[in-house]
Image (cartoon, rainbow, N blue to C red; front, side, top):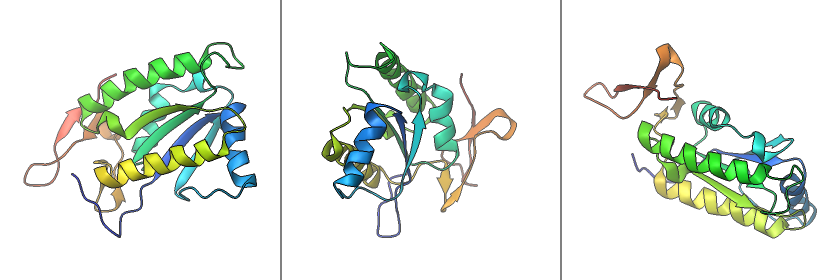
Length: 169
C-alpha cells in the first residue's frame, strides 16, 4: 500500500532517552529548528528500555513510522543501553517485515545533547521516508486499526479488504 499525496500526514513516534536524545530535541527547539509537528516524542529513562512491544504498540496506536534516538555508541549514561536498543531495533525490523508492516518504517539514530540540527534531520528523514512508503497498513482509510483484536493482526486484503495473520511474538 504505497499511497502518497497531499492528504497524507505521516504520524511518527520517537522514543528518546532522558539524557542525550531528549536534550537534542530541546536543543532543536531552543535553536528554533523546524521538524515535523506530527512527531510524538516519548521520553524513556534509557533507550535500552525500548522493547519490541513498545514499538509494535506505537504502530497499533496509529504511527506510520517509529524511530529511536539514543545516546552515541560508547557514551550511554546507562553503560550499554543504546547497544541494547540497537539490537532490539534490528530484531523488531525483522518482525515488522514478517507481519507485513515493513522494517523500513523503523530506525535508530545516535545523537548527543548538542545535536539539535541532527535531531531535526532525523525527524525529517523519517517523515520523508514514510511519505514515500505511504500510511501504515494498520491505518485503513484514515481510520486506525489495532492489532489486538483476538490476537490477530490486519495485513492487506482479500476482496473484503481484510486478511488476518496471527501475530508472532
